[in-house]
Length: 619
Image (cartoon, rainbow, N blue to C red; front, top):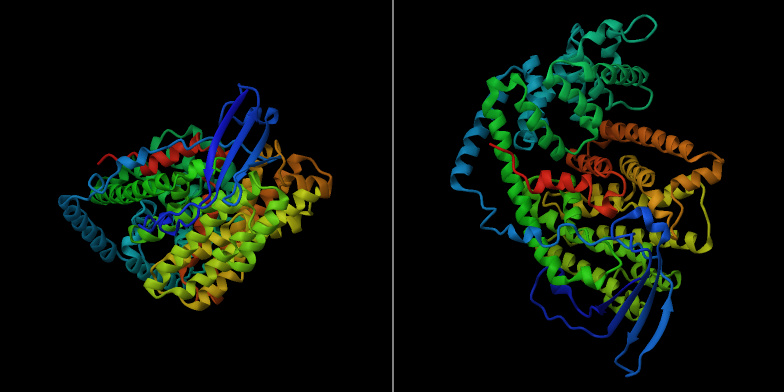
């Protein structure tokens, strides 16, 4: 038997505390929350295997200022027993002094940067060397320094490819050019690959001897759209041969490249993770010997950006510790560092430091709100809670209608958006607030829809489930809000386009939901929880779980084709490329999490955080 008693103060007015300002903290009512857990001691915190043996009940004891007596009510709650943060105060040690960039580093950085730029400009655009250089710069994670130069080169390469007779019979070069052009929203026809097929439409067996060509074609095939059958065949052909031949390769560098590609293709991987892994592979590749300065520049850049992220985490950890939300909301996940990792996945570049800090704060608060709906509140409590958010837009005037047990969560949300509003006013961007709040209300309604289904014991059909689930993934809220935090000048039409749920955003959300359901539904179904896509599919079609997994994977594959199509679509020329890339990065984040990673945050996910935020690259 384990019993824990945790005091949870009502948050009166913490607008200043949410962003670390100096306004007074005025507690009003005090609510004492006693959580009584009854479970096998073997089911230690963070161990999901014994969750089926877990029985929880929570007793709320409310003390109000109008009465000296206390009333005790027992309330059954769907508590999830999330473990505490695995990082704790670790990043407090990363002070501004410790993460400062030295003058010597700055000088060396600028010298190497200029050297790379000169090389990028001097190499002819129509050469294989230029294609390889652009690809290497992108994979090393330093392309953001040379956006205009790369954009100009890609435009020239695209123009030249349209004028040529397509006589290039080098599979490696053709596939690399195809991928680089599509990555920059230049449509290149899949017809360029027909010369590598037989009369029956199948790829020539002689290509199996060209491992570099196969690898290049494999990566290019991930940018296919619907109806490109030759690229479907290309993916199947290359996947089969690379899986078969990869382990037998004697060239250790090429073997590592094949292994990395099969594990995570470039197109579906986060740029920052790609950079960290490719730096090591490129260093072991003999071809880099003539470009030592490029490797050194990439290493120096990675470490400088890492220091920026470390400094942000130090400040964020201090903010989170001052709020004491980990104790105020003991039922919720304490995942500050994981939320910052998520934000870095959206935009990692140094110039977005302030946007990242704001977005991380928002994600940590939304994690609390998500768990309030999913792992704490009762249906009767959620009715007025959602009504206050939806009708009043998180206005403090509505807090009186919120149940006492949920007032702290509501107050946290109110103060968060009050501080966002203050920032937008200072920056002359108040028009962006309405879009952020629109998504917040939409998300609350979707969360409540799930609560209604759970309360009624209703398992929706797959289409109905996915329509709502695309919202509850929070991807739509994240996309719109993270965009609003950016310093770029962004047209009203772009925000309107975003909240209209374009195909690329719906596809990104679907990937996150389906990936999440496939890896997390077993854990979630061990307690009272809404049906996932897996349960919805089994009920609607009478198939097995394996059938449901297969259908989910099929939908994920189609969602990537949808995203690729919307990314390339000429009608979106008015939507900046960085906006579309932001949405695609949100989809890529779904591939970072392994089984229950965000819930447990202890296994491979912790290692990935260590790679990006803790361990620098050896210079």
